[in-house]
Image 1 (cartoon, helix red, strand yellow):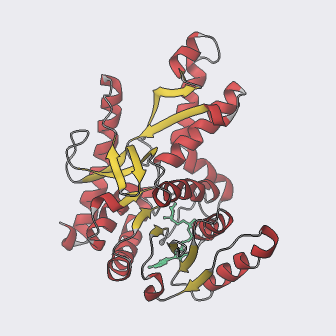
Image 2 (spheres, rainbow, N blue to C red):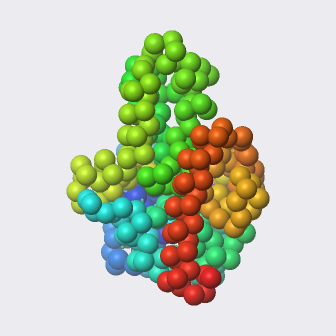
Length: 320
Ligand code: APR
């Protein structure tokens, strides 16, 4: 059987890391597409030359032509600009919306059967626009945010509790912005919910609140340290986890920006919710019940995403 084909649209910091991880994990052959001449070709060759030492079997190709993504099984989109210190994800909207239009059309014309994972920010609005521009079925287009936000939450919790990250589960709902909702009630250490761990004296409510806030600010913390761009190792790892679940029909339960049409009382919008990812794409949205307080936080986050979607419609009339 032929290897799966993974198209990476954008060969910058995240795109390059995605290509490296996809090759190391032998998820398939990789095509790196970018408008910057030489960048995708250079990264493809560099990673291919790590193959003999690593011993992986994967072909890598860099290109400026959308025809090379033809027949891709998975497309992961990072094309656009990242944040600089002092910028919010929302500041990227105008530039990245135009990029989503060309990328959406490129995917529509060359890889209409792909499972598409968008990473470009502001995530929830960009994935919404990408689905509209591409015209692909909504269950085959999703956004990577929740896996990353949850991974940040899990990392901070494992350090606080001094236990293996493997045993810390967490999930984060809502938009990928300052209003995201790290769910304390549904996050656990080996099944023990965080509120119980506070009662058991493993941590204090104040420390837990600080970790929740650090999770919300997780992206900005990295931007502040790097100064020249935003996070790329963990974002790439998170998207690879989603791609692998699709390619191997793992049916992982992962939070991601999925198209809600009825779920969580939402209409025609993308926002971070728990999903099942398998061979059918987003096979299920896990419509959990929220407490009054969680619902209020979720509503606030949804409103922030709605504002960004309205801004997209104002910029590009074809989306209205
Ligand atoms: N088509 C294809 N590629 C494009 C286009 C386009 N229209 N416009 C820009 N690019 C490419 C750039 O040439 C660059 O190589 O997208 C790449 C983006 O890479 P980086 O600038 O390194 O950004 P990165 O850190 O990878 O982040 C990409 O993901 O997390 C988000 O906020 C982040 O929106 C940003 C995106």
